[in-house]
Amino acid sequence: MPSKITTSTLMKMKKEGQKITALTAYDYPFAGMLDQAGIDIILVGDSLGMVVQGKENTLPVTMDEMIYHTSMVSRACQYSMVIGDMPFMSYHGALDKAVENAGRFLKEAGAAAVKLEGGADVCPVITALSKAGIPVQAHIGLTPQSVHQMGGFKVQRDEDRLLKDAGNVQDAGAFSVVLEGIPSDIAKKITRTLTIPTIGIGAGADCDGQILVLHDMLGINNRFLPKFVKKYADLAGEAKKGLDQYIKEVKGGQFPSKEYEYK
Image (cartoon, rainbow, N blue to C red; front, side, top):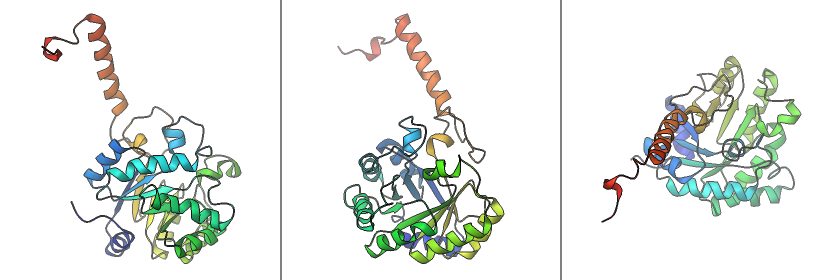
């Protein structure tokens, strides 16, 4: 296995034109699979509120829940860079509280960096965290924590604002930026303008890297999938086959057979 991915690795990959792979994970078994597969970045996203907890959006997710899940993921990773997602209202108040919350991801959960949503409005937070030695991944465009303010999950098309936000978060000290729900031509301009890597999700092929929600791309969830999600497997379908067979065999008395009994 190659050396563990760091912020310097990602910068080198952008400079050399190597695409960056990223996925979400929320527990030890899946994180181990991703790490062994060679995924560059594992984001412990606050998307766990919807994906794992079954909530309507990401807003109810707490800091303690994020630390709990990030800890599990970090323990599984020897190669992948683990990034903890700062949940709603964990960085919107006093800067010292934002630094304290972000620090927990590194100190308690073993993450290498944190991610937070927003453009120019969160630049003071990015700067404060960076000065405290906490690497920050920014996130602009469609930002799920602002779902109510945006009036839903909508593609973001304000090119001037997006370019400005991208430049601002870079200048504030972010080591990379997630571009979500942005037309591909705008994402391409942002990627060419910035010196830090861009990680796209619904932002086209010209970003420096791509990220998807693991449960979406592996077909674990049956929920609605956005246009940008490609299903690479149907784990829910395969699981159903196994469950149906198990139920059939138990009810029919075929399981456990003699080979599964102790003597």
